[in-house]
Every structure is written in C-alpha cells, then in structure tokens.
Length: 465
Image (cartoon, rainbow, N blue to C red; front, top):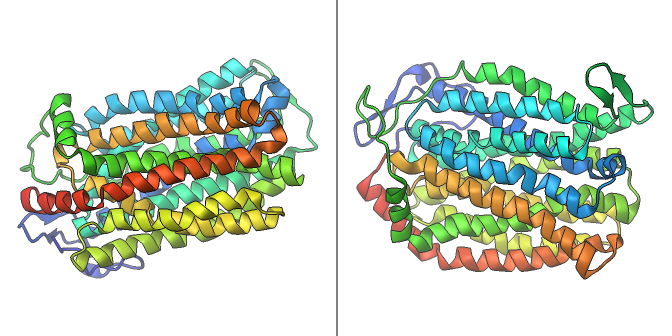
C-alpha cells in the first residue's frame, strides 16, 4: 500500500513517474503522471463549482434591491434552491458513478452547471433566478462522489487526504475568486447602466458577475475529457463494477453507525456552522461597517486565497504523517482538534468592533478549520468498500448541501427576521448559529473517534485497496 508513500507531493516528477507502481498487495497503481494530471484537472473543476455557487452570496443586496425580496427569500435562493436539487440528483448520479465512467460524469456535470450559471446572468425575475439556481445545484451534484472515487483509485490509502486536500485548494480558490472577481466586477460595472439585450431583456450590472464566472467552466468541461479514468481497485482488467443495491449500502452504514455518524453527521453539522458566515459574511460587513460589496469581496477573497491553501496542505501532510505513525483515527482526530480551536473563533468573530478585526479572526478560524477539509473526505472514503464509495459520497453531499447549506442560511435569516427582528442584529444571529452548531458538531465527532479507529483497522484488513 505504500507505493506512493515517498512520492513528492509537489514539484516536477522524476522520469520514472510514468511507470505504474505496484502496491503491497500486488495490484499496480496507475502511472504517477496520470494521477497528478487528473488531480490538477479535478482541482480546477472543484474551483469552478465553488466559484459558481459562491458568487451569489456577494450579490444578495443588489438582487434584493432589483427583485424586491426579503432576507428569507434571499436565503432560499442561496440555500434550498441550490441544495435540494444538488442532494436529490446527487444520489441518483452516484449510482452511475459506482458503475460507469466517472470522468465523463464530471465533465457533463461541469458543462451543465456552468451553462446554468451563465443563465443566472440573463434572468429577468426572482422565479427565473430561482430555477437557474436549481439547475446549478442539479449540475454540480455529479462531480463530488465521482471525483472522490477517482482520487481513491489513483492514490494509496495514506495519500488520499493529500488528494482530497488538494481538491480542497480548488474549493478555496473558488471561494476566494468568487469574492475577489465578484467584487472586482461590481466595482468595474458600478457606473454602467443596465443594458437591454434583444431576445433576453435587461442585463443588470451585478448579472455580469454570473456571466463572467460561468463561461470558463463551459470550456474546462472539454479539458476534463483529456484526463484518464483510473481502473477500479479490486476489479480484474475489463471487469465491470457490480451493481450494489441501496439496501446493501444502508446495511453497511447501519452496522457501523457510530463511525458514519461522526464522519458524515459531524461534518454536516460543522457545515451548518460554516455556512452562516460563508453566505452572510459579505452582507454583514456591508450592513455593520458600511463597506461596499466590491471592497468586501476583494479583501475577503484575497485572505481566502492566501490562508486556506496553507491550511489544506498542512492538514493533508499531518494526516499522512500520523497515518504512517500508526494513528488509525488520524483523519477524524484532525477534524476534532480543528473544531476545538475554530468554534470559539467563529463565535467571537462577528462581535469584533471593526471590520478588519472581524476579517483577522475569520482568517485564523479559516486556517484552523481547513486543516480538516481533506482528512474529513478521506475519512469516509478509506473505510468504505470501492463498490459503494460514490453512493456513500452522495449521502455526504446530501447531508452537507440539503441539510446544511439549505438550512443554515435560512436559520440565520430566521434568527434575524423573527428572533431579533432587526436586520442590524445579523451579527448576533451568526454568533448564535456558530455556538449551537459548533457544539453539536464537536460532540458528534468526539463520540466517533474510537469507533472510527476500529473501522479503519477493519478496512485495512478486509479490503486494503
């Protein structure tokens, strides 16, 4: 299994990198150059998915102004309209990902959601924007389980956190660019009046952000097809992956429920803690401190682009180091320690007296929190049999996107609209959300540490791939 254990994570690969390496179990790993190229291509896909979904959070107030909607309606647009199709369609697509060509699924998904993002820039009503947002969610649902499954077939067990952590860099690049480019576009078009386009209607200044960030993804969907689909571990050459019944997957999860409660449920509740500031942070700085949205986007985006990749790579290397040292619960333990450190920071951040202090505390919280991003995905991938990884991955997507990202923005909005009854009290809604969700997430992950160690040991013993 240690075939790639000593491979450098970055930099130019040696000449023999094109030669397939054999695992300790005798099954050849794909050529390193193919693994790194696929990882690069998919990391860019992840960047586009987060870029396309995140740019809307910077545009809440302009959208509210032009379409005359409330905070709760805006939260539905950001959350449920995206997340419900994402989770439901993702479950169906995941069954395909466990049996068919995963690379092609990723390419098709990217093409669909990029087209819907461009369409967001052409909508003429709230309902049309809602439908376009649903299309983005449905399109993006196909990339996650397929991408994670590809990574697990390209990299040895101790390197999976490196692969998923590198994909996480794409997510952070997408988040940073969403704010930075969104802010730059808003600044650039701020003095430009709405444009009437024949056959489409009025293109408002903020809509150019959707058109600009969605178009490159359409091109990249063809680049995805230049990467290779890796052989599935544990299958003979040319053998088709088995069709695993849903009840078999459910039985596997139920037999190990405490472990999966921690690695899926704990991450879901953690996502609920993070979704509040992710979706409402720009609006909060605008309302509380009077920063214009262009400035918020460019500053927040720059911080994310600088801080998060360092945390992601550090978490991946820590996972690899601890795993090689024999710490069987390394992936989940990194998540646990990250929560202990980040929860207090998430609570106090909105209470800071200046925008710069808010951003500084958020930067530290972001670094600590992203340490666990790669390990959290690797955690369930390495303990799940190959034949059902995508379906388990789709369950994770469903929890993180339907339950977490659909509910959390709405919960924060409901706190603001109905508990505090004051748009200026957004900071207290964010504090309350972080305190509640952070505490629950910490407890759920903690209860699963020992069960996860046993699950990892069983995985190594029963299906070491």
